[in-house]
Amino acid sequence: MIMEINGLKINYIVEGQGKDVIVLHGWGANINTVLPIVNILKEKFKVHALDLPGFGESQEPERPIGSFEYAEIVKGYIDKVKIIKPTLIGHSFGGKISIILGSKYSEIVDKIVLVNSAGLIPKRGLKYYIKVYSFKTMRFLYKIFLGDNPEKLEKFYKKFGSTDYQDSSGVMRKILVIVVNENLLPILGNIKAPTLLIWGDKDTATPLYMAKTMEKKIIDSGLVVLEGAGHYSYLDEHHRFALILKNFLQYDRQ
View 1 (cartoon, helix red, strand yellow):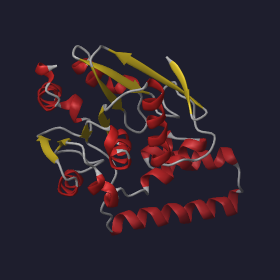
View 2 (spheres, helix red, strand yellow; view 1 turned 30 degrees about the vertical axis):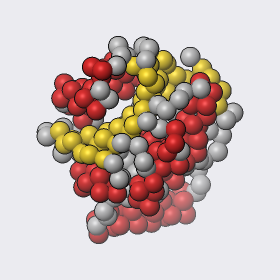
View 3 (tube, helix red, strand yellow; view 1 turned 45 degrees about the vertical axis):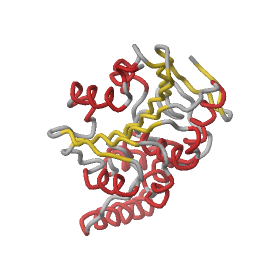
């Protein structure tokens, strides 16, 4: 289904009946990637899943926006559908959006589940900065010697950019640059809703130390670590993930 929110056409699905749950996918993903979570809950809950702007079947933003603007689009969905006190479940980038909503609109959120969530600036060593400045230097020299040719520059980005950067283009690439440089650490303490963090200990995209930092900063929170699971812990350890999620949401009492 398609709904217009803040001038953008947003694709979404709704499955089941009961208390409202909103599931938000990660960067570069879409509704299909979080269907395993939707399927866990749809027998007892009314589960909403959105293709975030620029992903799946939803419209790309016309200009670069950041995570806070993405959160306002989800808030727009909540208002349009007239959802009262939803539970937010966010994976990776979707977790980042859930953090923003939980901190800014604490009165409208019932519970939050952060699954290998983004939101913190990673610890960056010397190798990272060498890589970044080498990339910028090569890009500068590339433009000098080969000109500002869009097709040639695209080949350069495809060869030397990060995986997410390579997979993005146009406005989404500019949005990615904004998003990866946002730090939500200062607002974690504003979250009032009970918050469950579920993390894979083998996650290299959003390492486990980030989850431990979030647990310390979010007042009413708890962390469950799935051993052997990576960034997609809800897929790697699906059965354990389902049991933990159902327990937190009191699935059997719905």
